[in-house]
Image (cartoon, rainbow, N blue to C red; front, top):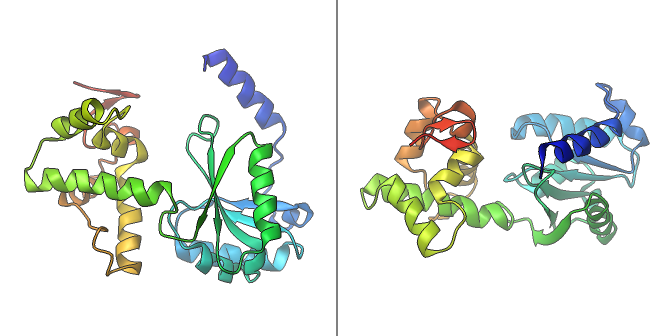
Length: 236
């Protein structure tokens, strides 16, 4: 997308947005998307408040990428009106929305969530409430397995990326992608899964990932992670 076109889309979108710090304003909404910090304790508090504010029948979708939709539906207090509505970053560019159903989610809620996402110009897929849903359930273990290869000394960071780009036709390797996602985000997702699902052996924390996060090197957004970055470009 050219910069001028991107600026036009951004301006048109912002012109349609009304902002407020008063949660009671959500009483007027037919559908609400929760997209606050990925902290389960903070979500518990906010979702409980929303359960007391929102009209009965209003659909609430969480944009979480890794937390339990079932747990959050219980925090909300009306699990039949609750679902996952996971947009991907950057939202303007990424076409996919995952719509997540729990055993308590009503068909009315799923229908409304799909319709809302399609009104936003997105394509939807549906999934049960499994850790990471579809994309992150496959993606995060892929990234962690690549880093575990580095931990073991099986291959270098650069060679792992080159192998997956040239041998599997990936647009970018797992190390570059992890830096784009954010190493802190990868660490947070894995930590949560390891705590909640201790018997799932594929959820492992690479030492390289732990070290980088402790050093505050989160990837592209901090200028250094597995690679050094200058904006969106890797510094060779």
